[in-house]
Structures are given as C-alpha cells and as structure tokens.
Amino acid sequence: MPKILQDVADVYYGKSQNGVSDQYGHFPIVGTGGFLGNARIPLFSGPAVVVGRKGTLNNPLFVPGDFWAVDTTYAVIPKENIHAKWLYFILCTSRLELLNEATGVPSINRDRLYRVPVQDIEYPGQTRIAYVLDTIDEAIAKTKSVIAKLKQVRAGMLHDLLSYGLDEHGRLRDPITHPGQFKDSPLGRIPKEWETEQIGLLFDLGRGRVINQQDMARCPGLYPVYSSQSANEGVFGYLGTYDFEGDYITWTTDGANAGTVFFRTGRFNCTNVCGTLKSRGRVRESFGALTFARESKKHVSYVGNPKLMNNTVSRIRIAFPERVDEQHAIIDALNDFDAGIEKELAEYRKLLSIKSGVQDDLLTGRVRVPKTIVEGAAVA
Image (cartoon, rainbow, N blue to C red; front, side):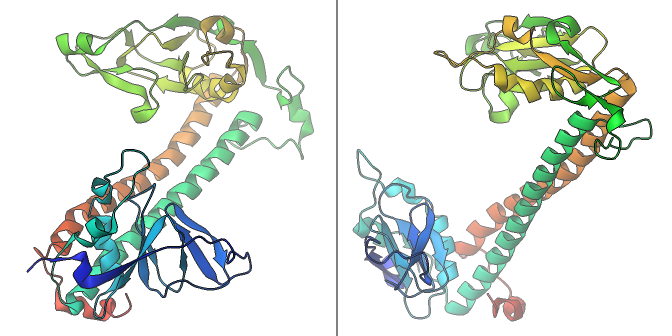
C-alpha cells in the first residue's frame, strides 16, 4: 500500500550557519548546491537527506553522518526502520521541482514535501534496493572520474604534440635535451621542420548561409546543419540537401560561442554564423582545426556582440609541420587516445541507462531484489 513521505521521515527546517561555521570544524555544512564548509557543532544527526527549500529544488543530497543544514534547506530524517539511502533514492526520483509554487525564487512548502508518495517496502527490501542502486552509482562515479582524468591527460598530450611535434620515429621532440631541433618563430619556439603562416594563405575562407526551421521542415533529410549552439557539437537540425562535402574546418563567427572551432567531414550544411576553411594543400583540415582552435579565442572581439569574422581569421598565424605525414601522425596519436575515452564514455552511458531502467522498477516495488543479495546489502 502506498505511503507518503510523512509516514517514513521527519522534515526539519535548516538554520543559518552564521556563528557555527569553522574551517576546522568536524561537521559538514550542507546547502542546496552541495557542501559549503564545516561547522563546530551539528544541527542534525545522520544519516539523512538534505532537500532544497529555496533555490535549487531537484538536487537531494545524502549525508552519512552528523551535519548542519543551512536555512534554505530541509533536513529529511528517516524514521525507525527506514533506510536513509533508500529514502535518498526515493527523493532523487520524485521530481521535487514540480512542487514549486512560488512565482519568484523556486521554493517548496513543507506540507507539500510531506505528501510526496512513497512505496511501502519493508526495511530488508529497502536495504537491498539501496545496495543495488548504490553499487551502480559507485560504478558511474568511478567511470566519470576516469573520463575526467583521461581528458586532462589528453589536454596535456595535445599541448605537447602541438608544441614539440613528432620526429620521423614517431617520438615527441624534446626541447630540453635537443634544443637544436627547435627554432624561433612569430609564435615562439617551434620545431625546425615546422613553419608558420597566415590562415588566409593556407585555406580558402567561406561562410554558411541563412537556414531556419522552416527550411528544414520543407526539406527534411539526413544531412546535418551546424550552427552556433555548443550542444550536440553545434547540430541545429537536418536537411535533405548539403552545401559542403569532404573535410572542412568550421568556427562560430559571432555570439557567445564565437571562436569555437570544429573539424567537419562528410556532407553537411552550415548556418550563417559559421565560417568555413578548406585547405589549399599544405595543411590538412584535421590538423588545422587543432592549431586554429589553439589561437582562435585570442582573436575574438568583445566589443558588443563577441565576433570572430573572416577578415580577422585570415590574418591569424598558425604553426604546422611541413611534412603532411607528421600532421597525420599527430592526428592518429590523438585519435587512438580518443578511442580510449570513447570506450569509457560508452560504459558511462551504459551505466546511466541501466540505472534509469532499474531504479523506477525497484523504487515502485514492481521488481523485487532477490534475498540472495543480502550479504552485499549488509554493508550498504
């Protein structure tokens, strides 16, 4: 039989941390956005759940021990024989933002929070559910951490590749042990085998055209339309025709994302807020996108609306290896590394999908966790 939150937990108002905040305190101060510092004394005993009362409403936080909840939050304290982590997962899936009744700053009335539906599940079942979902969350967090570290390594790797290049043996040149392999240039020290040149002398510059939702509705298809949005790497929609085919560099010419650079390949379209670069032969587009992206943001004009127009881009100087095979070797090295990142991203998406498919069934009681998992659940 369904219950409501009031049957399984007590909800208390948080208080201002003024007077108790202390960097050497032992008790976390919890706000709507996360942990804000430390307090000398606790306001509540954990484990418990902190829910936003004002501001951010849809970000419940699990607190394993004693804590201080600030005055923009509620402390949700589980009653006897209620598993705190199970209660946390219930609140995470309860769409608390829909409880907002305020016209200004979002806020939740405690009486409405108390009426949040809760499935009637006995404590052993709660424990098993908490164990399963917690295990998935731990795997998600670990995978997310691995991805973040790999992206940091990639950023360092990209810097080294564009600064030192790869010799004929595929090894990074070392400016410390082999300074003679480098020379001065308008862009600083670069490998001797590299050159610098203005983009306008290396690429043909172009621009997209005006394409709107009506155009895509009249001519639907499979060919992407790229625009200024950073989401989905700038995919604005799709058309049944295409303006560009092959390898190109594109960048956002104006707006908040001005100077954002992409390597594009295949058949596609661009709106009029995208500039395009097509190589004249000395620099491959896949490599040019990397070195252009390194310089592009430095040349964005912030007088009024941010802009990086074709006339400015044409004068930007980039560094590149004259040997096209070195350009390819650098791209291949990055692609190999990116394949490892994509493998972790695929695992991350898989885990999110598993959690999405499992948690609703478990928390609503439609699916029961087998008792055979109780040994693992004992440590949840």
